[in-house]
View 1 (tube, one colour):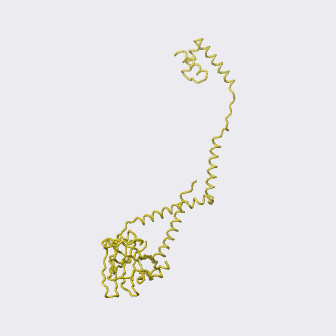
View 2 (tube, each protein chain N blue to C red):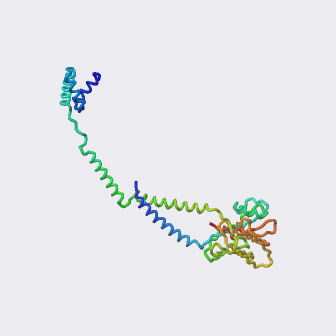
View 3 (cartoon, each protein chain N blue to C red):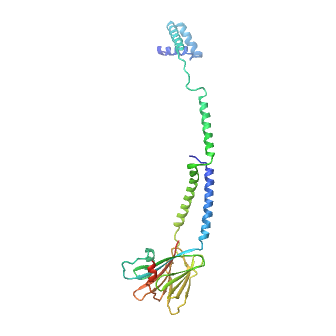
Length: 151
Length: 171
């Protein structure tokens, strides 16, 4: 079956133009919305069977800095945040975070414990990077709130 | 010239295939040689018999067979061109749009692969880190990992890791 090259090229051009138009609109619509993954992690030296470990990537990064060998994910939530809006999520019985989308990948994260804000960190969070809020617990272990931006 | 060659020459002369000087020389030789004369007469007689006995043969196709084939070829090509010029239908239509669509899909695939295989620039936190504390009694330490892939705020503060029972129930 033979088709003229000109005919095929013109159709191809029309489709590429449509694709660019649609994808441009899609990108414009999605540009200011971000998705942030927040995880509450417990770092400890003792192995705790039955608990879910964090992803290998996060464990590797945390273990490179901190002394603990095991990192268990206690909670994980995904926040889809539109431009200039804030979303709140509760990570434990007393701890919660507020995440604000401040455009261009910049986010502000406020950590609350028992209703009181402890700290607010603002930075540009790029896919593949992590913002970690952490602290020790009473025993020989630590808590981590690991925030990452989905691609 | 041996006998066989002479016979062939005389046969050629009878068939009218010898001309010019060669024919004249052979004729002169035949006039002086009775055996050759006899051979020529015999060959001439045989030729006469064969010419009369030949069956008429007709061509399986008319004289302008080849021209008709060419004309048919031209007509076939014209019909094909008209058929292609008609609006696409059925499988043809699918192919006409399918092929450019496949091209676009390949383009998208290549672009997306290029996007995913871009070198990981990793992190350059550099500027714009802001930290605000509301509890003065908490000791805070901030630092970035060597590869800048992780920024850490370490608080001298213990939070309750237990999950909300209502949330657990909902989960």
